[in-house]
Amino acid sequence: MPVTDHQMATLRAQLTGRIDEHRRLLSQMDNAMANQYLSLATAAFFEAAMRRFVRDGSPVDDAEIIEFVTSVRLRLGDPDDLDPQAAETLIKIAIEKLPVEAKNGISPELSNSTKIILLSGMVGDLDPTPDQLEEFLNAARAMTDKAFS
Image 1 (cartoon, rainbow, N blue to C red):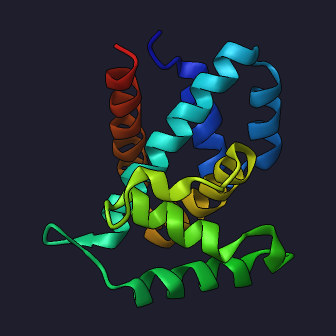
Image 2 (cartoon, one colour):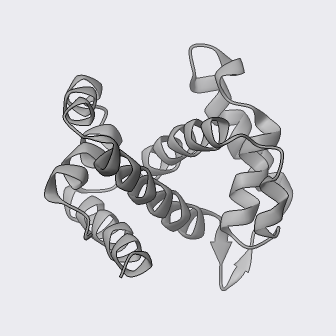
């Protein structure tokens, strides 16, 4: 099933800080749509991580990942809302510094919430123009559609 415009609007609302709109759109999804939305958000996380933490085809040093995770934690109302070890591990998996098996021990719930928080931080740091945001969202959509085709 291809990504829907509704799912794209939900992710766009999240990434542009329209939290009430994000929640409203998310609440309208059934379980199947919500699961696919999580796949879209995961694809966006991987896309953002590659853009943020891979330069000239190589992953950045661990120190840059640690610095980013620390900066995101400092922006949160409660820094404990983001587990730094899980965050660093998920970024390293996304940029292929660690194998997928490295996430064993990270619950699906922690993985999903961590990726959502980090995604918002990465996109916020990029401060994309509306056109750049659409290009980014379309790349995530294409990645998700390819995975489900």
